[in-house]
Length: 577
Image (cartoon, rainbow, N blue to C red; front, side, top):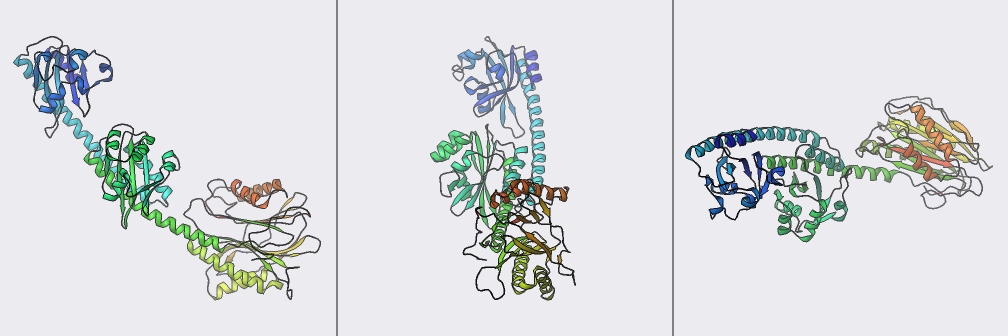
């Protein structure tokens, strides 16, 4: 464009030559020679108050003036005093459709009678400049079309694999930010009669909390887009003020954006929300970009619908799993605590569980001298089926332990395995099942059996941590005649016993043994004075690292010294199960 301006200056012999493109509120100079007036020469644009080229764009015809000061159309233009324009000759610059984009103009600072030859040369140069502009426009459209196709392909790939609303929110932001380059990407979900803003987990904004809910009948652009199921464009703040409620304008101002579009999200079962894109500068949305944005909104709507369904299933599964976890009994002389923490990826539910329930002494009519059964287990799988199997195994082991109470934990586990083979119930996994009975000196005697589970950890009063490594084969419905053994140990006053599932210590690419050692070290550091609930939270935070990709179950038992505070379990009554 600079070359065209230079050709005009040389061939027509003028001090100033411009390639001027006229926009809605200004003219810009992609080509400029000889213009010295500031600040316009440095900015390379002026407002329309300084434009004679706007008259060429409006009329679609050449404008030739020997003295602009003497013409009624231009005599009041600020181009005369501020830019030094006196004589002016401008030829239209057009696109392939014939739309006038601006003008190629020759300017003199004194009165001048333009010759036919000068005007013919200027007209020929304008035709050549128009051809160059058309080539650039076509090239731009081709690049935009290719970029749009690539963006849609990525959208299809990225959004199809999303597993939850948070992931949809993140993927949409990353997709459009790289190509369309908005300064703001918002996602609002339809919940009943309201649109709820889904906060960006990486870039939280005050607007997400202050304007969290918008009524679907409110005078907001997002509500209009949802109701009318069409893309709503807000050109600028003045447009927002003219069309929407003061609250909508206040929300607009809090974002600091200059223009925006709101795209309805319509899925197979109807509207699910609105996608909002905002730019910090004027951003007119052309036909091609509108088509791309509409397609992205379609992919987003499908992903949102799928994510809502999946999130609801996961929530139900977690509620089911939590419902099957035991309220801990209150046992005189014992301190109990448990923790269940689902996988942080949110798309996994599984078969991890803990259990604690009283074991009555044969012929006893009171809780005095009663025992206690403890179990921590992990049924293989990370889905609702695994959670369901876990509930069945837990109930069957409870029943077996109560029936086989006098025979010990191994007898209960063998009865469970026999039931799984007979029913049949294809359950597999690992577990530790223990029976405890008071020893008469304040301590407790424990017998346990381990079916391929990580070793329990015992903190003794002298501060030493012991791994209870004795174990047998894992629980598997296809195994017969498993050789299982009861192991026995006395737990003195001041002891702390920790049972846990592999979600605490097992990580791909990490040493399992070191993780168990670290767990023991943290257990020893806590000693007997750290409340058990706090201890379990600390272990779950520190040992797995973040994020944990598997469920974690912890069950702890402490035999307090006389005078130590005892925090009862979550059950009600002296021996509630």
